[in-house]
Amino acid sequence: MAKANWYPGHMVATQRTIRELAPYLTAFIEIADARAPAISRHTPMTRWIGRAQRILLLNKADLADPAVTRAWVAAYQKQGIHAFAVTAQDPKARTQIESVISRVLKPPYRLAVVGVPNVGKSTLLNRMVGKNRVATGAKPGITRGPQWIRLPGGWEWLDLPGVVTPGHSHDWRLQVLGIVPAPAEERSQLADRIWELTQDHDNPSGWLDWGKRRGFLRTGGVVDAQRAADAVLLAFQQGKLGRFSLEEPQ
View 1 (tube, rainbow, N blue to C red):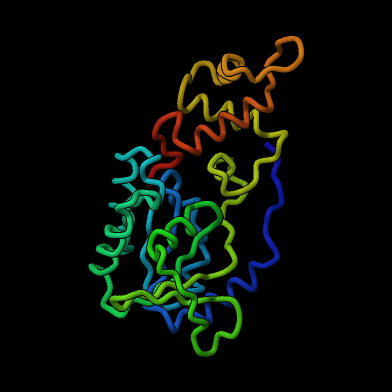
View 2 (cartoon, rainbow, N blue to C red; view 1 turned 90 degrees about the horizontal axis):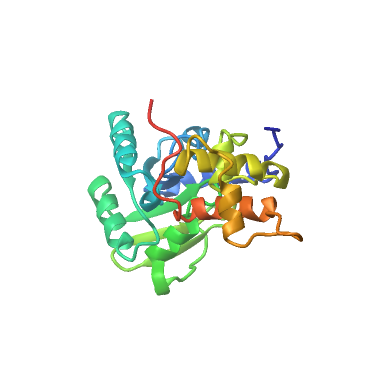
């Protein structure tokens, strides 16, 4: 599969912002995709945050194989990393995440959510601040961009602009998860991989028949492979093909 060059130019600015913010924070809340926790993290983040504490949340746990997710949590905790599985879209997520944070940290809680694109950062932040979201301005020394959201109980969440890229941006699994763009000419190959993993190991192109049954057709009744492949990727991302993990801890 061809490699695409995907490394946004604003990475340097994001790195600088994170380094500047670290002294003002109780911890960074790092978000990864529970279906691929290692490759969906930004490896240099450890250097950027310095001595600030970090809590790793494996989001979208409802879409991953639960046994594999438990293994990931155990593996990270053995490494001394505070890791927990969550589903930010769950209405109960706020209570769960606040409980996790309060077990690890002492108040006041000044927290920044970081992670690569499409792992659920915005969903999680919106879940935590709810309708009480009030931007109160930047901390001293930070003149542009970051906005603090203060809530009752000593909670402060940082709405941090910008994104960071994953360390394995050419990995096909990141394309499947929607973390990095999937070129149109490669989506049929990705659909093969998904179908082989989730539906039929012996017939990876079975998704073409699946697409035909769902009416993804061109003139003459021929299956529209592009539309069918796009539908397979979306179905996997939304968990409609089942709960699957794309990597296991070593």
